[in-house]
Every structure is written in structure tokens, then in C-alpha cells.
Length: 580
Ligand SMILES: Cc1cc2nc3c(=O)[nH]c(=O)nc-3n(C[C@H](O)[C@H](O)[C@H](O)COP(=O)(O)O)c2cc1C
Ligand code: SF4
Image 1 (spheres, protein in one colour):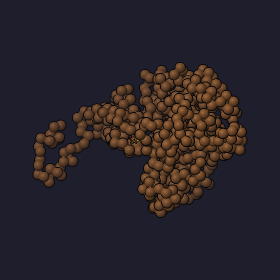
Image 2: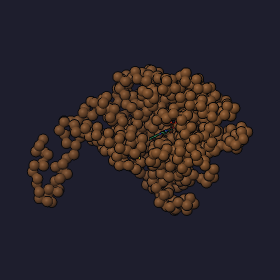
Image 3: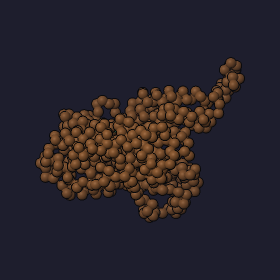
Image 4: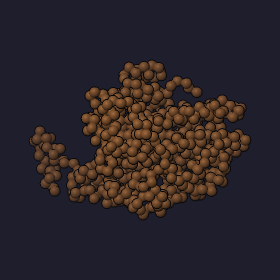
């Protein structure tokens, strides 16, 4: 295993020390890592947690998701804090005390409005808490001396089933696998019907088989703990309380495919979980469950390293994640070849979601039939959901696949929801007519997020929030996504500002389809889903905000006025005002 510090970690340490990445530090990193300076500069530019301009000694980032976002009962907490601390969003105050900005969902959606202060989450924001934060910043009290309860992240689990009800004994899945052999263990995983829990639902046993059967010098096991889809926080719970099972599942996978090295790619927003995860890894090493000759098994060495991301949703896409693991900007690769044959450093690599590895560990202990007894034919087992938004009981729910949306809404005490967004902004927006549909791969598929929108919510505001998210998170590699997501955002903003025209509806349709069909990766393929869903199911959302079907979105006459003056060409027939 490579012992050198990961480039992202080096840059994170520099960012913490200097509150930005100074040019000489970038140059030093380039020399140390034997990389062109341009490559290090590209990495710094790519990740939102790096900055080339100094940020404040208190660097505050408000989550801007629809659930853990900073709009609380009509109050914009970000603007209020900016006023209290006499600064403006996105700028560092002249005395460098504080910088305040927003960031994409930080995965605290079940805790209400949330922020990161110097990278540490504070949840449950309200006006009173905000005033106390402002006072501490003004008094320059270091974050370590702020009330500890502000930083406590409590995971509320409302429903436990196969995976959350019991913790298997550490090492029990491995012992079972060693006694029956790698081939038989893989056959059990395949028979169980386990499909990936990260969203796409690929057959897990098949993925492991493909990797096992591919020739390669070294194989890798990678856990995708990037969990950046707004409204998703179930992996936060799993990493916090079920880390043993995760490590067990990863080690099991390594045994089956013949890997010696594993990685957990942990989203930067969950850095606060790092010390606890590191000590859990250490504990397993001391018990012989990781490291050389695991459980005295000859010829089986495996260990796990944690790489912390730096604020880029696209790094959840598996090939972008691998690029990031290699210390590069997280730009999705052209596929095929797929990671399973050409992944990390070009070697066969299995990438799975946190929940998938945990399910594999349970299946090995309890058997394929135990797992298949829950769920549906095409969707075996259970799904862990992150439920948030307009409901009385936000939190984590584990259900057998096949549960109806209505059941979930009842259980989370959502009264008269006008819509739910299943699977985050990239998933599906569904109205009451679809509430009897089921959560399953062959019906409504989900990586685990259920966002509830009550009647009081303006759906156009939700669409603008989602559109802004995708425009911000697009990696910029391909034009349909880079430009299309921005145009979608602009069009929705125009409609919200009352400058929409009926032609915009057609434009949203066309743009949506272009982004969906012509983008390079899954981000683009799904970025317009919410708009296209709305056009089908809530067709009144957009026209309701248009003043007249003939309102021009763009004032052509005004834009051409100076050109007409200079060229002395009046082109009378082109005066739109005369056509009104
Ligand atoms: C933009 C984008 C973001 C993604 N984010 C995640 C993520 O945070 N976690 C995850 O497990 N999968 C995510 N995925 C899916 C991964 O690419 C990949 O399919 C998954 O990690 C495979 O694991 P699984 O088979 O266990 O689901 C994302 C995909 C896309 C296109
Ligand atoms: S679709 Fe978007 S996120 Fe994906 S490669 Fe293209 S620009 Fe990047």
C-alpha cells in the first residue's frame, strides 16, 4: 500500500493551516508529488472546499438543501447572520474574522437548518442559536470552546429491519466465508439477489464475479461513502453506528475477489466521523480482522484506508470517485471500460455503497433465503430510507422493498403531502396519484432519500433549488450538462421572476431532454428529471407564474437600442413593442 499522504489530504491540511492554498504550497505539493503544477492547480480549482483566496478564521457554510437549508419559516438565516456579522455572502470580512457562504446539502436533513463551521456540522439552527453563534464569532471564541451539544449529531431511527435490528458478531461473516470458501460465499451472495443500494441497483454478486474473473495484478475494494444526493443521510448513520459491519462486508468482498487493499471514500462533510472510523479500523486490526493473515487465514492480507473528499457531489459517481482517489479532479471517465475491470490505477475494482457491503455481511451470516424472504422478487431484502421535509418524524426508516410511498408518508407523519421527491433531486417527483406505488427497483427505485413537500411549499421554488444544485455541481466536462443545467436554472429563475413566456414550457421540455439524453454521465442524465416530472404531473406549476402568454422573456428592443442608434438602422419591422 502506498504510504504517502493522499494529495487531497495534503491540500486539506494546507487549507486548514492557511485558510487557503497559497501558490507556494501548491508548487511544493507539485514538487513532492512529482506532478505538473497545472495538475495540482486543477485539483485545487475543482473541489469546493479548496480556495485560492483566504477564507475567514470562522469559515461558515450554510447547507442550501430543501430540508437542511437555511430558509426557516421564511427567514433567510444566511442573510441574517451576514447582517449580524457585517459581511456579505461569498466574501471574507476585511479583518479576516469570518467568511459566510452556502454549500450543497451537508446530509443533516433530519436536523433542520444546518451549517459547517470550519468543517464541523452544527444543526437545528434557529434565530436564537444564530445570535449565539454570531456572538461567539464576534468574540473570536475558538470553535473548540463552543457548547459541545451544538455539535452532537443524533441519529433517529424510526424503523429497524434486517440490517438495523441486530449487529452480527464482528468476524462472524468472515469465519463463515473462510469455512465454506470464496466460491460458495459468492454463490450465496448471487442467490440472495442483492442489488446495489447506491441508486443504480446493479447485481452485486455479478459485479464481484466480474472482478474476480478479470485478470489483473492487483484488485481493489472501494466503499462509496460520498452520500452527496440532497436529502440522503442514511450512510451517515451506517458509518456512525454500523462501521463494523461495513468493514466486515468490504473484507468479505476482498476475500472473494482477491483484493489486498480497500478504500472508503468519505465525503468531506462527514469528516467529523473520521476519528471514530479510524479507531474502529485500529480495533479490527488488533483483533486480527484486518491486516496480514486475517483470522490466521494464510494468503489473505487486506487493509482499509480512508480518503476524505473535498466537496464535490460528482465524486459519488463511481468513475469520478476513482479519479478522485487517484488524486485528480473528479471528472467521470468514459465507460466502458467499467471500474470492475479497469478501476483504481487501471486495476479491477469493486465500488459499492455502504449499505450494500453491510447487506453482504449479513447475507453471509444468515443466508440467501433469510434475505430473500423480505422484499419482492426483483428487489430482495430491505432498503434504508432517509426521510425529511414536511413530516412530523424525520429520520431513518428501514423497510422491506415493496413498501408503498403512502405507508412511508403515514409512518413519518406527513400530513397532506402535495408531492414527494424519491431518490433526491436526481430521482423522481411524484404527486398523490402515485402514492400507492411501491419502492422497488422495478417500480420507484431509490438510493434512499424521501423528501416530503407539504401544501405550503411552492414547487417552483423546489425546482429552482434543484436546478441550482445541478448547475453548481456539474463538473463542466461536457457541454449538454454544463450549459444545459445553467439554462434550466436561468429559465426557472425567469419564470419565478414573472418574466416567463409560454415558449419557456417548450424550452424546458427540449432542454430537459437534451440534458437527459446527451450528457456524458449520470449527473447529466438525471439533472432534468425533476422538471420533466413536473411538466407531466404538475403542469400548472410553471404557467401559473406567467403574466401573459405573450410576455417576452428578453427585452429585444432595449437590447438593440444602442446598436440601432450607432448603425442608424431602425429595422422598424423588428420592433417587438409594436407587435404587442
Ligand atoms: C452524480 C452521481 C452521484 C452518485 N453518488 C453516489 C453516492 O453518493 N453513493 C453511492 O453509493 N453511489 C452513488 N452513485 C452511484 C455510483 O456511481 C455507483 O453506481 C455506486 O456506488 C455502486 O454501488 P452499489 O452497486 O452498491 O449501489 C452516484 C452516481 C452518480 C451519477
Ligand atoms: S454530465 Fe455533467 S457531471 Fe457528468 S461529465 Fe458531463 S458535465 Fe460532468
